[in-house]
Image (cartoon, rainbow, N blue to C red; front, top):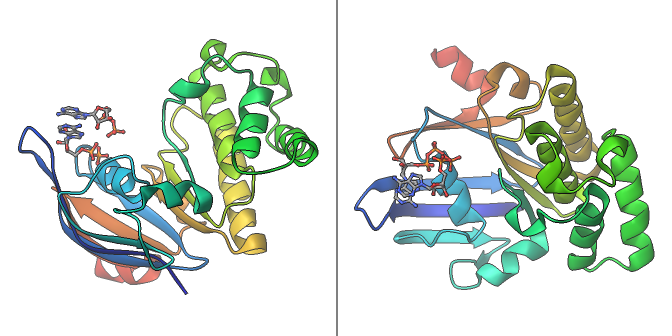
Length: 227
Ligand code: ADP
Ligand code: ADP
């Protein structure tokens, strides 16, 4: 029941910057993994390779056993991914962005409409239902982005700094929603975060990255014994 298997992953950008250096890790079904490390450590690079947005220089990435470096088109079928800037959705309203993402994931019109309505209610997004994404605050854009990740009940969620720009109330809502998703549907979750204390209540395992290298990959409890 391994979801992701990463083996010897190395990324050297065109400017010769080695952003990931021989990273190997496995994520099992139902695990919630937090990626921690200083700015520039290579966290986003790792995630972007795992979702097929950046091509690895070396190494292997398997998703449910499939080689997704060769077949990155398979990734969106299983993985909900959201990063800072939903550029392609900028001109859509909050509702349209969530609904259209559901449609792109194969939902019927009625199912996508129902799910978008439920997510807007669950995440208190009524205020931005009819507002264009480009006219929203950073925090509102993040919450709509979060809703687009959730629609369609994909088995894997990957989130890069999901709590950036959110106030404490919104952050709690996001953590609660992720915890519930994991508990009820067994959703596997990988997230980058700086909010270690908040993440601790949701995260099972932590991957610590520095200078492109994986320094530790263990349960929160085990890591605490070491520091
Ligand atoms: P983090 O997410 O941990 O802040 P990143 O993965 O964004 O780290 O970046 C790791 C290193 O790779 C940094 O030194 C960054 O400047 C560099 N980097 C990231 N993207 C690129 C790119 N497209 N081209 C060149 N260097 C990059
Ligand atoms: P993050 O770490 O969250 O990716 P950054 O601000 O570091 O955010 O990077 C924003 C974008 O710029 C990313 O797409 C990244 O790949 C790219 N980038 C980062 N550093 C460099 C760099 N040194 N050269 C070229 N592109 C870079």
